[in-house]
Length: 287
Image (tube, rainbow, N blue to C red; front, side, top):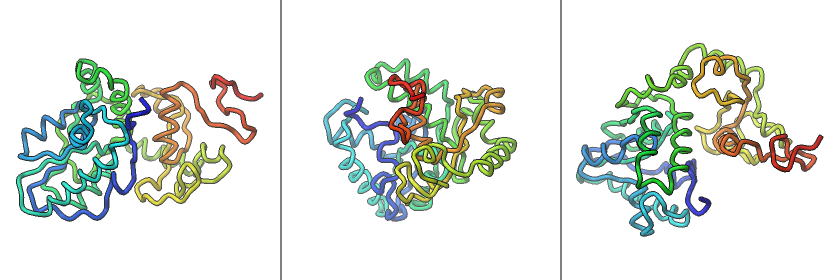
């Protein structure tokens, strides 16, 4: 698994999210969605040309679709961005495929490229998962794709630019919970009580959202935010959602450390005494 780029790899880098592309002159639609949401099919049916990082990766590396080693990622992103820059000239109708679960990311692409549409395909998390499990061509990457799928729905938030296709929200009650006024008030109250990242504090520095998980200055505007995170996964259960204990995390620790912790079943974080802080760690926690 380590030889392939993980979900969210290079997230926030200039190559992954350039800021210097020109407004599209061609009829352009940005197609977003989780793995197995149908982005490739929809794009090929609704545009003459498709810009898809997975396809570019395959063409550059010769590896099977979606199984490209990370060594090819920089070149693939550069080629994708060059193709997007060509949209500033006359040409065929084009669909640009990008996962983009966060509203700020989709809005940033829309502000930069001025597409005719920003389509979000949302057939629902359970539908996408069933497709992944049934798709034999994804057998070797299924585990990574399911992780990416879960992460997409954890991060997904609507944006004003969106044209949503599908009724996925009806099949994902936790998304309705996150979009509720009650949750927004609960989140604000929690962040007022705990205004710094708990994981960063355990590492010995204060992070109010302006730093990365390593303590460096956070230079990506859309990641300068704190997250009210459910310590125990709720999986859409209203009882766990409303009554579960919360903790404050920075974007880095929420997207990377916490997701890895949930996948492994324990945290790898080391305290100041050199021992794991999580008693579930195989090495055991001091004390």
